Amino acid sequence: MTDTPEIAQKAPFPVEVEEGRTYFWCACGKSSKQPFCDGSHKGSDFAPVKYTAEASRKLFFCGCKHSSKRPLCDGTHSKL
Image (cartoon, rainbow, N blue to C red; front, top):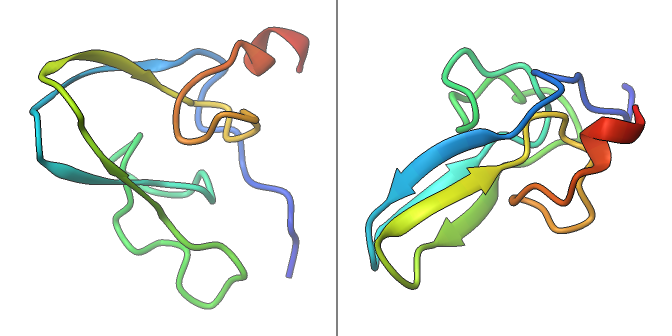
């Protein structure tokens, strides 16, 4: 198994989140429902990252899967 995630895209995913709703961000990069988990990580060392929205607003979820602020984008994609 590899501990390096696949890069889903080299840009963040803008998502309108709802206050109090829980989201599961794809950490492996293999999900067909990016930026969220669809179970494609099964059989690997990856697990989705749980995120509960504190407010209803637009957030930018990491698309490159290398952010230090996962599940949110920190700009790391610009250095890959």
